[in-house]
Image (cartoon, rainbow, N blue to C red):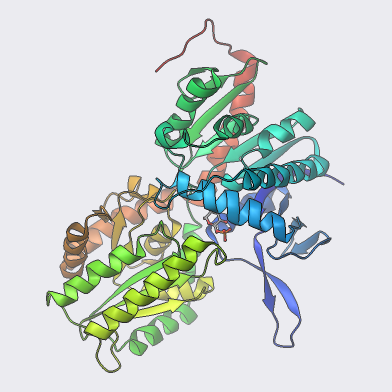
Length: 477
Ligand code: G6P
């Protein structure tokens, strides 16, 4: 039996976990993408197609917590070429403002094409007549077109979770036209912010030569593709409820007391990624200590760095640099039993994350570029008592919505120092006012609203294409 909804993503929403007896089991992974899509999956009885990690071949479809999962195997060569190579060595840095230098290798591209083709073939097999296929993120940008060719009956949506760069950067890609055409296989291409959608439409007009009007692209075969922004969010209520459980409350106390019950706790939680600005924020913090604005008896910085893409060279370098910086800061400013930075290179389940959010007085989110940043929203959702401060980079998508945060430019160390200090010294009235406003936003725009608006817009594009055709050629600038 086929499916009426097929999610195509690079990863499955589960991780392999070891049981105490040495056997292993699949557990839902705590990542942002999963939280975002799971509710829609359940509602529509869908199937999720993706790579479970590792190189195990010939995996059978399976179920976790009632979700149908269809594992796609990857060979070691595919992981190197498609995942570590083209996805994370070329596209990731290119789409994040060249924070690191992207590498362009023809073998990586070939592997990206081959893996996208395999995912498209499999999706075509699993989808019922007229089904909805929702393709996720930068690792899968060729899937929409490949799938459209195989199955013109399908409704295809694509959502990019990371930023879509300005034409001036995207232009560098030797395969720019193929990627644009790949995305144009979808009926609806979703972005985090309006700027990303506008970049895409402009590129399509300039590079592919299709007619466009506002957020619509008119293809020669009569199809219309819409490109629009759908800022992603979190399960706000779920997080708020989790944060209030007795277990999380007890764990929060334990964390604060293990840290020596300092006056204020600063917190950073990020994948260890060079886009996240961890190095700069720790430097800003260390300078505040050096300038005697507070000392390690008053405050501590907890930095959780979740291991990520560890085979990619840039990530290995980042880990070394971060280790060295943390060591130096602790060496310079720490006292016995009182490190300046409590640094954890590990990933944690949702419950522990919620306890950390609750324990933190000041959440510090300072990416150089970030599609959205769900950590910022999770922190806000966890502050059910309207306490806590958020220091947030202007260059995170979340800054468009969380205007009451202390917004910072992560390239400006002095500016970050001022913001960290202001958040540290802020009076309760100011904190509550800001947090209340931000909580209102994340409550209203939660993940259910996000999925809903994407699905509705997808249905609308199809209707639109039946009724409206451009009366004359136009190419608006
Ligand atoms: C970002 C991307 C996701 C990706 C996640 C984790 O959020 O948008 O597509 O799955 O990072 O990265 P990884 O390389 O471990 O899948």
